[in-house]
Image (tube, rainbow, N blue to C red; front, side):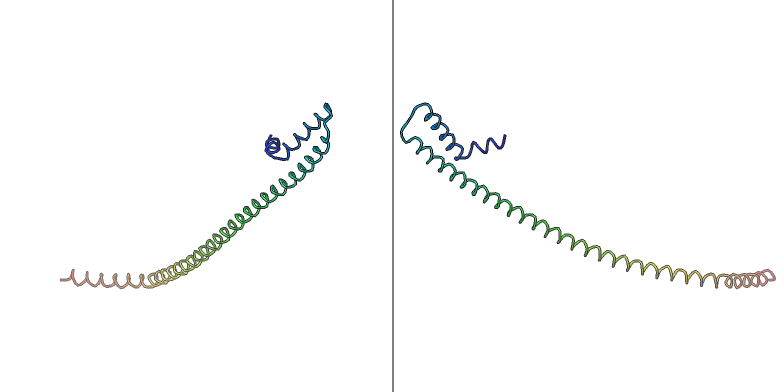
Length: 142
């Protein structure tokens, strides 16, 4: 349907309709120089059709260039967003590595403190126990 609409909208279509009507009229009623008029209109119609084809091709080329520019802009924007995303990812990796290092230092510090407590708590209990019995002895004896 779009093809028919496009065809009816062209000027060359109407020139060829006029040629056909004149040809039909010439077949029924002999008119002098009608053949020359039909030939001139046919040449004019073909030329007009060529011009319309060139104009249509220019319109297609213009739209094509416009679409290619939009695609290039989209690619540029996508590349920019990709670059920003990669920078954010790298920053996140750096931050994660920093946090991991800090966490490992905290874990190491906690382990060292735990080992120190394990080492000194039994001695502390012995000290407290020995003090406590001495205290009880002196307090109870009095």
